[in-house]
Image 1: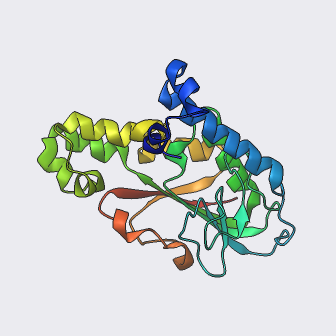
Image 2 (image 1 turned 45 degrees about the vertical axis):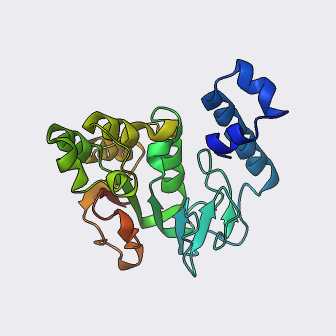
Image 3 (image 1 turned 90 degrees about the horizontal axis):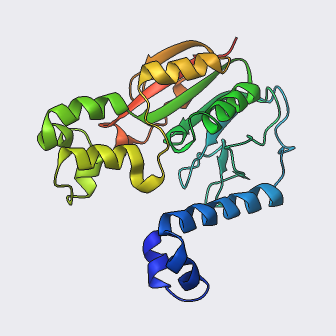
Amino acid sequence: MTGGSLLRRNRFPYRPFLKVIPLHAVKAVSYEIKMARVRLTHRRTDPRFKPGSGCLVNVDCGTNGKPGWVNVDSDAAPGVTCVYDCRRRIPLSTGCARAVFTEHLIEHLDYEEEAPVFLIECRRVLQTGGVLRIVIPDGRRYLLGYAGGLDALRTFSPLLHSDNHFRTAMEVVNAHFRQGGQHRFSYDFETLCYLLLRSGFVDVQYSAFGDSRLPELAIDDSSRASEVTVQGVVGVA
């Protein structure tokens, strides 16, 4: 439920809470309650995918689930084949996947607590030689773009393509870094590479849009091509 819908439904049980608790806190608690329900009502390990099965996994796929893939998301949207909260666990067997793809997820995770757990889980479900492909907004590009002002940011940022209410370059940078409180950390390649190596991955590589060590993994969303840096095509030792 969005903040706007909460305000529109400014009646019991929302009205008493909104009088004493900030809206962003209500939204955060509501989200965590939803995620707890997902973890309690779905299998911790999907029995369909056993070690060595060589499946392709799309984590946090949203409505972009791919035919023939294990499409994991916390919402039971069309195309989702496995529902779970992957901030704490990926509900698949150890060594069952030959590749994992995730796009615009890790920046929503806490850098100290959730991101390392998620990457270790990706490492666990991948078989020897498996590949993890991570697509994220490029924080470095936004910082460089800020120095050039709104015109420089407009050349690549979808924020300025979809919403023209920004008045300053700093507003755009904050929208990228924070996204209404949903983004928890902004990455460049160096930082993500460090986190991947610390989580047990090897052979971390920078990868361009649509260019992957495994052709099947080149499923990056084309609407984000001008902004996103694809980082961490990773071989597992």
